[in-house]
Image (cartoon, rainbow, N blue to C red; front, side, top):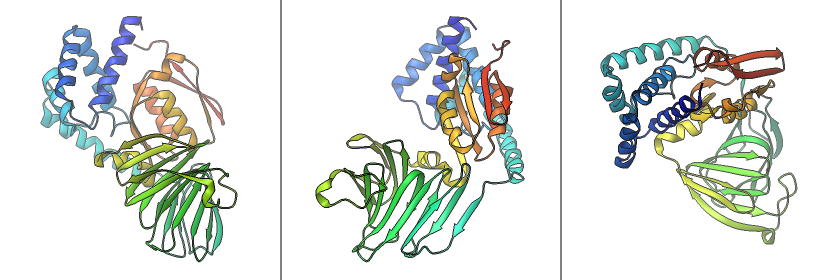
Length: 345
């Protein structure tokens, strides 16, 4: 693939990703129209990528959804597709996908009984677990995660030692619910939120109510700090997501329709909307003991959209080979190499 073709391909992928889940602004529509008019190759590549993303196996639902208003108009105007026929094809595929997934073994989902005042829980790679605490609060643990729970008369304390978990907190105004993660603290009374500990950075997404995030001086595995050892950073409300360590790095609004995508792991799914292959591999690696290496640097920026069920890594490999021109080599049971096919166009 020459430099010009590569550039057009990447730009087409970027437009497909932008069109996912949102209506283009008037300014973006103008830019897209100008981009399409640059050459016949531009519009052809956009149509080709739309077809390719739609025809994926398990990487379909998020690739080019027909219900997206901006893309719907684009497909009618730029490709001449019959939208009703397009919907029928998509619906037939969706039904087939549901049938296929129905016979696939889901990852283990354990439901633990009520926890005593002090307990520890962990999940293996690829496992998810639901824990019900003594006050009725629940913890949904994602892959390769570990928490310890310590309930006292004054506090309900959880330490997220590694991984990711969603907390649905039973209201007890005089007994705060606290989650220590890395060098951060998340405090709530009656709410629901997810916490993801990635090295020393903490990501919090609030789905109900609000939480306060604090910076602390001691590690998550140590005893709860004294008041003087923590610093209030921000209050995060439902529909917001924040990334922080000792300072707040970002706070963003999460659109209502994007929350199921952002927290799709609650349903045993991993979803992507035009993410670079390098980012996809990093996320997928959390759910499998297999090491995945991208040998060709140009593949790292290849845009991927779609979903797969936790534990179905091989289906993702099949989709990459079938629709993205990626060669998948299983070096051994613990190592997979990804490279560009020599005949890729």
